[in-house]
Length: 213
Image (tube, rainbow, N blue to C red; front, side, top):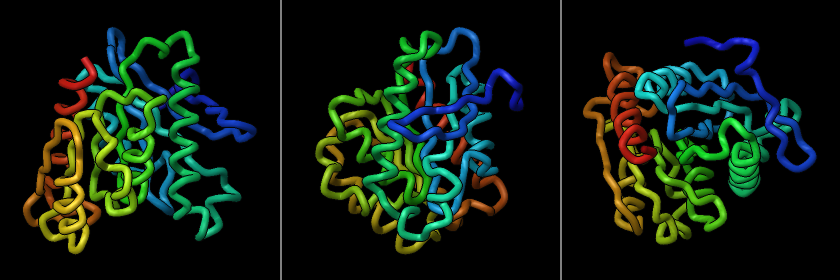
């Protein structure tokens, strides 16, 4: 299911317009917002691959740029987790104000530094997030709020992704709600090994399909 003219959207957060792609299968009860890592964008081939598998399970997806082009050129801004979190929370508000997505249960899929934004966003009571999935996440950058994340949360991390694996194991113990940790054996940070990304996509798809019903 590729992009079409109707799927390209402009996500307005405060006074900033962010480009995005919104695809919602018929009959969907949930929508997943993707928070990509630093130096990536809504065109991330890995996130798009995961999004496709998520939609195949009847769940909608919104892939959008958390930063404007100018902001993305600045190294500091890419790692400004509080800014990324504000953008994700703003996009959540934007989704809830649209007639076609207002009633959907919302989930967050974060990768790398985007995982920190996803967890920080989920910890905010006003977002009312129903599920979170983190792929190779810098979850250590959200340690102080993990006890406030009550949404069912899945950490997916590569078995050979050091020290991210250790950070995920430590952070996992701090999560307050329902949780699961999937270690993809032999996989490194970008899950480029044969079958690794497929495994990520299947775990994520099943988690969202179950929790966003």
